[in-house]
Image (cartoon, rainbow, N blue to C red; front, side, top):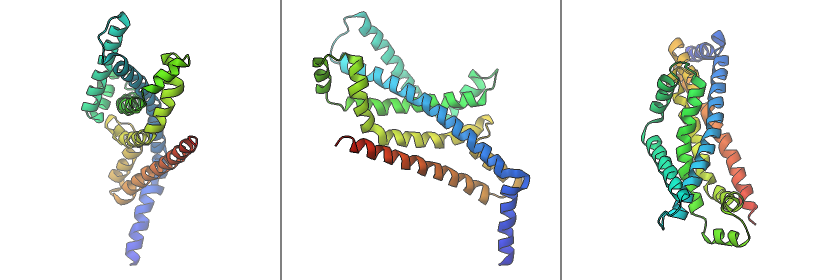
Length: 243
């Protein structure tokens, strides 16, 4: 029994204490959070923009023929958005990451920027469909009511439609944010020393798999639980504001 506990202690020491490997894990966590944060901002920006374009097209042009130049422009932009969503959702995120790093950023090899762009663009396609579904779920009568009150289309979207759509799709958006966090674990494919990469590196150096991999899994789990906690609080607050 004593040998068993001694083995665990030795494994713990090699994983965390030797060569200050706990600091390496901490740095890896910082890289993961940095990529996730900026990719999240980019994904939300792209997603809302694409969702507004696609919902505007669906609501204003789907049941009538184009007759002005602006309608043709909107059709072209909507087609580009459809192509973007199709390509991004139809290809693996790790392939998109490697294309971004080894082809687009081949001369500079800016790993963090490549990762942020890859994950942000990927997330944006999913956010766009989530937000679009929320916008399309709002009753068209609210558009007509807002116009009778003197709101133009832009003001209606900003002040009336988007806030309601956001409440409706918040759970789905929260799930997408959690998925984004976990997707960043493939950043090691382009030699970024994120949390997963560091955990696997420690495993390869110590020949101890238990503590490095379980530690990485627990850290991800804790982050997800924290995100879920704040999302539930936000949902509850938004729900209470309706009463």
